[in-house]
Length: 193
Image 1: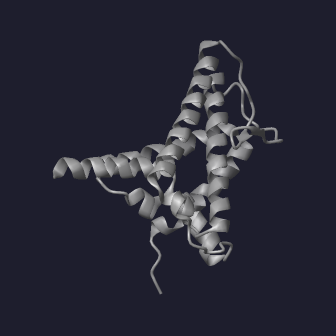
Image 2: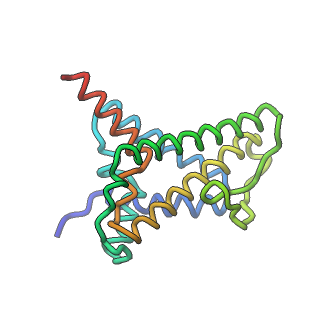
């Protein structure tokens, strides 16, 4: 039996992240770890160690799909692996992220008021009152948290859907963070040649 390492339990991080967000949306800022760490590792270590070993979402999808047998384990369609889909999804994701940052800026500048809504698939309002402590942080900090939690929830649900339909870690083949870290690693390898 393979001995478990500390990072084999990082799937718990994904669950804890979403639970904490239910209690206070400001915990969504913790998700920035999953944005900064993969990019930092690929920039400085010049590899995809985060994706391969430390990604809690990838581990969670693998656990649900493999151990709990929730995946149909069907081959992933080739178009999902294609460059046009991966880079297209990355561009779409970056547009959504920039829109979220712009909404945060509008709240910061006072042009709009705080929008306390979580949107699933960027359009469907989740019918839940998301608690946060208004006096604990500026409205722009809360605005970013609402937007970021929406992105994390949507991408996790997309990951679960493709896990159910195909192989457990199908999401990893077009994950925007994975695509960006792959681009960074390719740039490093190209420089060294």
